[in-house]
Image (cartoon, rainbow, N blue to C red; front, side):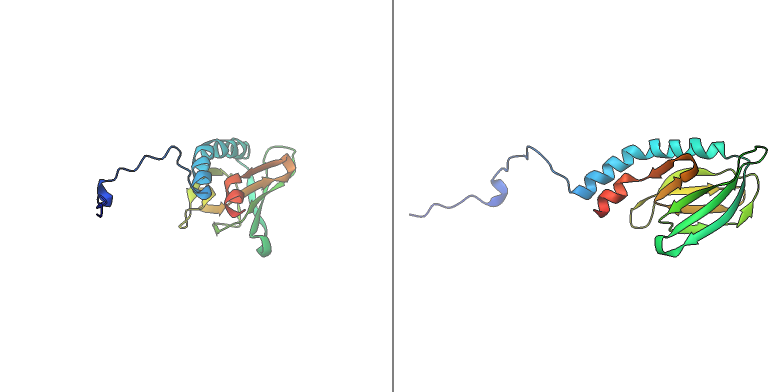
Length: 150
């Protein structure tokens, strides 16, 4: 005597007790939560540069690093560099006065999270993974980018 098994669609599967998302998905979710804080901190710094002169200082192809020299006006302080690391997009003038740099978070066509720093008044835009200001000991880096790569 053979006992027939019920069709698969009538067998109820128990719901999973724990859903484990792939690592990349977990990191991306954390990134979206951390992004507003990092952008706000970067914009606090950029506001201190308002009114400065900005100059193209250099580009290193091997690291895709663009350096913008900033010279505050009306102050006795010297110019300093802002490095944009893993620079994926760059457009705009090579020198301008009265800089008004602002930062926002964007995603590229592959879904990678990037900083976009722009001065809308002059058409300057740079998109990068990390912003470094050595003179002030500042680094704004998407930690999740390193986690996704590693």
